[in-house]
Image (cartoon, rainbow, N blue to C red; front, side, top):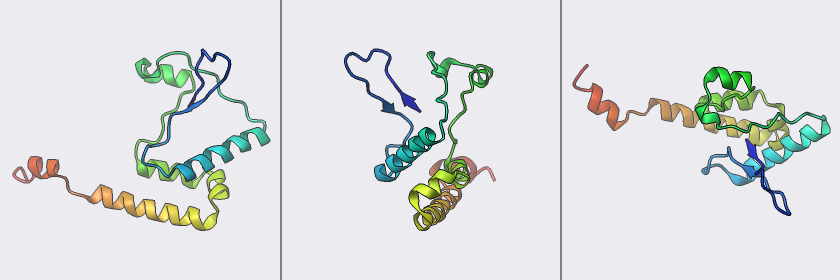
Length: 126
């Protein structure tokens, strides 16, 4: 998700709006740069701009406009990353495979953690 402000003045800037603030900025920008270069090399068309508030759009309106949601969690993000050929090319096989492995372990640790909320709401019930 890249935003190019409509009122540009004498210059143009872009805002990259989707990386998580906790991400590794070097890996994130390497991926974005190589993805952009791949788009240029393969003459890919940029999607049409969306000039309305997507948060107020219905699911049907988003689908009609070709707007897809980003992965909802780490597992979905990893599944998308695994089938992205640019990712392994950018990071190299060694880093790519280790990154996937470490993030899968992180997801397993997260999804099996028992939270205070679960204890408070379910311990006495079941």
